[in-house]
Amino acid sequence: MANIDEGDRFTETFEAITVSDTDVNILLLGETGVGKSTFINAFVNYLEFEKFDIAEKSEVRCLIPTKFVVMNEDFEEKVIEIGKDDNENNTMTTRQARTNVFPKNRKGIHTIRLIDTPGIGDPRGIDRDDENMENILSYISHIENIHAICFLLKPNNVRLTVIFHYCIRRLLSRLEKSASKNIIFLFTNTRITFYQPGETITALKAILKDIKNNPPFADIKFGKDNAFSLDNESFRYLLAVQNGVELGDRQNFVESWNRSAEECWRMLYYVTGQGNSKLTPHKVKDTISVNEASRIILQLSQPLADNADLINDNIKSLERHKQSLLRDKLCIADLEKNLYVPVINIRCKKLSQPITVCTAKSCIEIYTVNDLKKYRYNQKCHDPCYLQNVLREHVGSPELINCSVMSNHKCKICSCHYSSHMHIYYTIETYEDQIYSEGVKTQIKDREAAMDITKKLIASMESRKANYENEMDTIIKTMARFAHFLQRNLIAPYNDAVKAYIEYLLDR
Ligand SMILES: Nc1nc2c(ncn2[C@@H]2O[C@H](COP(=O)(O)OP(=O)(O)OP(=O)(O)O)[C@@H](O)[C@H]2O)c(=O)[nH]1
Ligand SMILES: [Mg+2]
Ligand SMILES: [Zn+2]
Ligand SMILES: [Zn+2]
Ligand SMILES: [Zn+2]
Image (cartoon, rainbow, N blue to C red; front, side):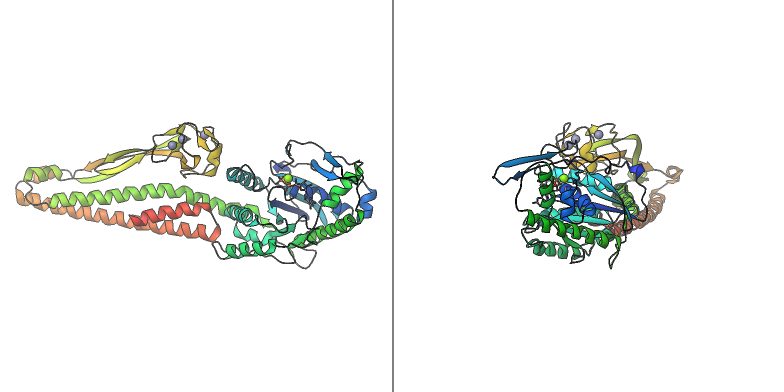
């Protein structure tokens, strides 16, 4: 009787993952119910028993709890249930990413890690998908090397487009685009299509073309070499038989098993380079450094935009003040009052702990400084917020879903969506200052002297303005280079945010 085999499978803590050259790490991704967990279960048996008749006489192993219904020879439904586990809920869907390790001392491969993940296309909706994908991405960020990113697909799948596209987008938004070289395809449930991918091919090719034609122009290969077809029902069959259920059609399963086992080895050879090609493992750490750079860039964009705002305000107020000084018929008393340089300044207060604030129109407070409209984030929804890893000063950072004031993605305090919220590490307040030059007043003896001083003041304001404009120019160029970097390295949903900032700056 088959049992959960604890001896061969263990869930590693991140610290324990030491990767050697002969290790193989494979990330499994795909729609919910496509058969990721079942594949892991069957895979270990295919490697152990390459032929069905050997497997039949041995005890098949079951690493991940499973439950399914089969029809016996008398058309009675029989429930096969093996194992129980917190990570597989009642309906046997996987809840969290988890590594399954097979120590394997054969054919030059030591350890194979298959990373099971929760399926995408969660019936509970796109929000749940975002959450699952975020968890998967943060899970893999702890793994040094990924040899293959394996997309599991069913043949003749019409829903493929949306889900697959979404997965790839999210994946490439986090991993560097070179990860696309490590993508392979595995078709499950293919007995009915005679082990062919069927209609799925057309949809898949169209998506890959679309990905290639859009930034960051990732070229994902799809061909005989990196696509594998199998059917794991023979594994289900053996589990059922070994659990005392009589099933017919043995011959079908023999072929299915032998073919699937062959495909698994072909896949391993493709990944490890024992065939003709070899995949260079994707160094997640390298990717992370590109990501780190991107994170820093994104964190800089808000302060840069704030700075640009400030400069802009100053340019405007200098211009306005100059006009007022040039007005005719100013009496000496008026001139005297206005002989200063206006400076818009900000008070910046660094916070010891970040605050979750709301940036929605309905939640910000507008105030005026020197006729300029300014706003501040008065809606402090979580102060302080202890969440870590939230992108600083970035509206709608996905990690904010986990802020304790959020429930179902909505803020319990201000009732806006989480995506209008932001983690701030500093607060700023704008105010107006006036710089007077010393001794000016005593020099004003008559109208002529006053005009002379005014001229000098205007000249100094002009040069101040030129400096501001220079600085603004540098900021815009910097922003453009940042955006270019992000565009080259990531298909980031964040790109849009940075692009928006730049457009806003250029607008002004
Ligand atoms: N006939 C057949 N059934 C399969 C195959 N692979 C999986 N199944 C069945 O499909 C159902 C879903 O399989 P799972 O392995 O739980 O799917 P999953 O991808 O892990 O799903 P999530 O954990 O929800 O993402 C189960 O009833 C499996 O027994 C296959 O190749 N052929
Ligand atoms: Mg699963
Ligand atoms: Zn919080
Ligand atoms: Zn709020
Ligand atoms: Zn709000």
